[in-house]
Amino acid sequence: MFIDSHCHLFYEDYQNDLADVLARANDAGVEYFIVPATNHETARQALELAEKYHGIFVAVGFHPLDLKEYTPERLKLIEEMSRHPKVVAIGEIGIDYFYDRSPREVQQEIFSLQIELAVRRDLPVIVHTRDSVQEAIDIVVRHAQNNPGWKKEGKRGVFHCFTGDARQANVLFENRFLVSFPGPVTFKKGEMPDVVKEIGLENIMVETDSPYLTPVPHRGKRNEPSYIPIIAQKIAELLNVPIDEVARTTTANAIALFGLQRDARTLSP
Ligand SMILES: [Zn+2]
Ligand SMILES: [Zn+2]
Image 1 (tube, protein in one colour):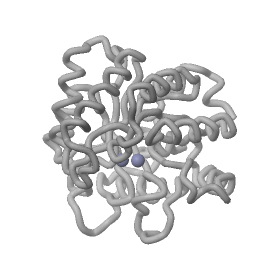
Image 2 (cartoon, protein in one colour):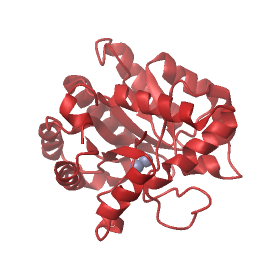
Image 3 (cartoon, helix red, strand yellow):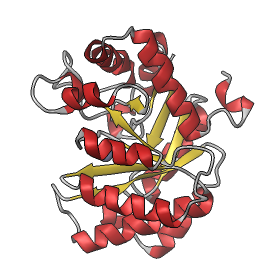
């Protein structure tokens, strides 16, 4: 069994065939889906999906590329939504210095406010970075060290689509964060495969980031969660382990991070 730890199934790309997309994913062994919202509006849409499909769980928060939607009142709304039984994280939050759609100080400030929300609610965070890994690590580590009681028993979050190096990954692991890898791990160019080889399986998850970042050989088309085994297979090859081991470890990591086992109902069909 696999879990797609990051897929944006509320986008229009899926509005005509989401049931088919989920059925194909189930056929491929992908049974649970973590759907991170990008603002208060997509949070509402994601929760509608979670209420309709038992396999879907949600993260709520403001994406760094969507901060034009941010207001303090709407953050209160996000906090209220975070009490929904199918909300399992605050996300996707972070900083993005590639597109730089909002001033960097504003991005850092709203990222921090949302980590504080996660600490208050004792939820993990789903972190987005682009050209900003070290800055984001500095911010989460500061919050983790100031709040030793945050997720006392478990992991505090994940850096999704991790583009840092092994040293940076190890700083995250020491502070009880995971990293996750999507389709680009299958690309010929890029450093992701080398980083996977260096850090190993113990602290990683798999994700598609659907509808983006489609893995080879489907590159150029819409991404979907049924492609998770392609990513897992690539990781298995890089680490020279059976794909079953990748499935077991990454699924156990996702179940533990998102607390999916805390309510027996949530993991039964
Ligand atoms: Zn992202
Ligand atoms: Zn995303």
